[in-house]
Length: 310
Image 1: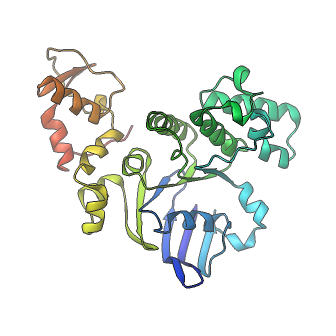
Image 2: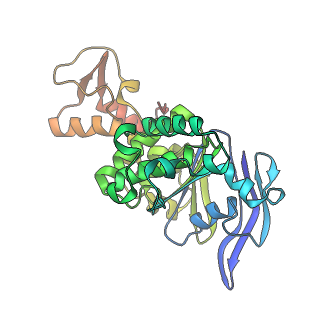
Image 3: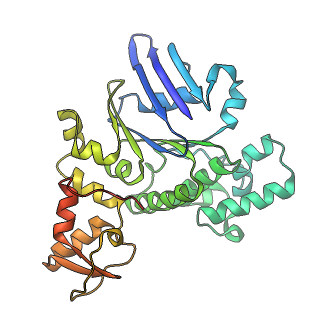
C-alpha cells in the first residue's frame, strides 16, 4: 500500500531523514514512534508531499507519488494533526464536508455523510452539526478532526500526534474509540507518536526511529520482548511489558473453572486484570465463563504465551 525506499530529507545541513526504507501493508495501523526530532513527523509529511524529499522513492498503492498531482495525492489520504486544524469560521457540518465539497459530492450525499461521521465518532448530529469550533471541548474537536479526515472515505489515514493536545483522561478515551473505529473501517493508517502506551495500544506494527534512522521495526510484542539494542529497551522502560497488556482483553485468556470474588468487567484488559489482582491480593479473579490467573499473565509478560489482539 505504502512503500518508502532509501528516502532522504535534509534542511540545509540538518539531516532529518537518513535514507529510510519501510513498507505499510493495506489495512495496517503502522506507528512511527520515537523521541522529539527523530524524523517521524517529517517522514509522514513526505508521504503526502507536504515536504519534498531530496532523494529516494515513495510509492502509494503501487504508484510513484511523483506521478500524482499534489491535490490528487492528498485526496487519497485523510490527515489528522495534534492542533486539530478545524476552520474557525465554519461550523462542524462544513468542516467535516471540506473534502467532499472539493470532490463535488451532491448536497444530499454530503448531509448523509456528515451524520454518518458524527455517529461514527460518538457525537450526536442534532447537537453538534451546527456548532462552531470555539464551542467544542478539546476532545470533541479532536473527534471532529477524525470525522473530517474520514469523510471522503480515503484509503489512507495519516495521523500526526492526533491526541497529544487533549487532557490525559480524554486522550485514553480517544485512543480506545479510535481503536474501535479502525477495527470497523480497516483503513491503512500511519500514526506518529512519542507515547509508548499509545503505540502499544494501537499499533499493528511499530517503527522506532532515532536521529532520522529506523532502529527497529516489528510487532509490539517483538519490540517489547526482543529489543534490538539498549536504546529500544530504555525507550520502552521497565514497564514496557506491562504497557503491552493494555492491548489485550482478559476474556481472551481466561481458563475454565469458577473462583470466588467479584468478577472482572467483560471488556477489561489484561493490564486492568493484573491491577485488580494486585489490589485484591489474589492470584485468580473470576471473569465471564471462567477465571484469569496471575500465572497466565506472567507467562504472557515473559513471552511464554502467544498474544491475540481482539
